[in-house]
Length: 207
Image (cartoon, rainbow, N blue to C red):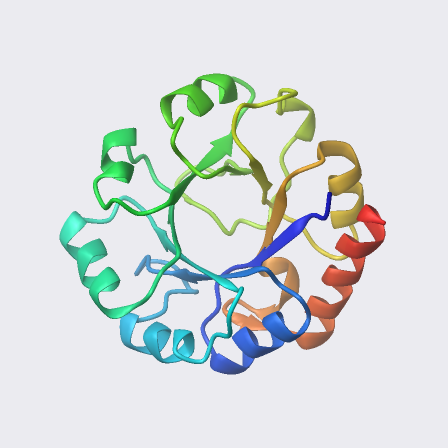
């Protein structure tokens, strides 16, 4: 099966265009004000208005107030919500929108239980744990902590780049991979050459 690709932390129209041109299946916007990759709903809406068919748009939130999420939803067409904080299942479900839950993996993380608790999520996104940082750390976690045959599709994140994404796919066999810092010049600014190299790494690993 082909491994899907989401390129997250898009802040500029040209980066969204390049990600799509290179074959990304989804692009992600970070609606977390403390992130260096934060994008305002107004700018995100402008970018989304130019997104072609068959590309999914994902909005990332971190323990956001429901009013803020509703405000974003009123301005930006999002195909999928990504909850990257400590949101409980009912909080994720209240918007009647497809969602996925991000889990920051530690040695004692019970991923089987997460898959049970968030049974209606479209996927679990697994990222590296770093104290006080909800995501985008650039760190790789121990992939051997991932149990076989989780009941939900698995999206692998955490420190992925062109050099290691092939190995990650071969070892973990995720439904999709999620990259942000690994295709950047600086936080929030993507690099066309790095995107191209990352996409080649994905394609070569799944041929």
